[in-house]
Length: 312
Image (cartoon, rainbow, N blue to C red; front, side, top):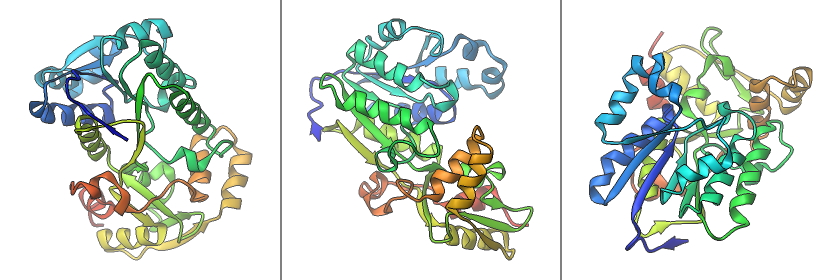
């Protein structure tokens, strides 16, 4: 569904300025000249004064981009307190992920609905939770389905969900165990033919900014991005080309990964490995991605690997 953007003032609030939030702020700031929009970001008090923000120059960059800063404790604040902040904005985009704790996604969604914001982008920058369904190995995903139910069951606030697949860097993260450069091995989740879709946070931020500001306005839709979709066999080929090394290929079956999760039921990485091994809702055709349909350049898995792994 697309609706007319005419005569709708764009006051945008981004929740959080982590890796994805900062990328989104950059993307929005680069595009705002084409439309009359104001951009603000909601941060914790600790973020404004914390060592991490000062070290990376994050706050200075946000201010240099002409972005206003709101302060609130996303975890400690009540729904009513968050709603009072959100009510001043037309579009609210949550870049607050799972690290904020259980229940946060429902809480932020409830606050957006109580505030009556015109349009809400929940933190759904990941897999296709509808296809995965409830009761998956990663129990946090059920809350993402709660959020979708909350948004779909009302008609006051428009919503947009951006499905991005796995963050590209996570696919190569040593602790995740798929790409084991030290052992010269790729461990395929499920099978070598199982596929995964990945997008970099930088591309997600840029593409989401384009989706937010597109006219006519996108509303009540799930939009897909894809920096790349590849099988684990293709991933092994990528690692071989980039490193110049012979890469062993192993398969970690669904049964094996489920057994590991049973042995370590609270292990977050075991949960992710098991759900991605099932191969449902974690990969889609690049041709249907927003970036493909709009001719926008993105970073593929091999380009990311060349820029970040190097040879040797």
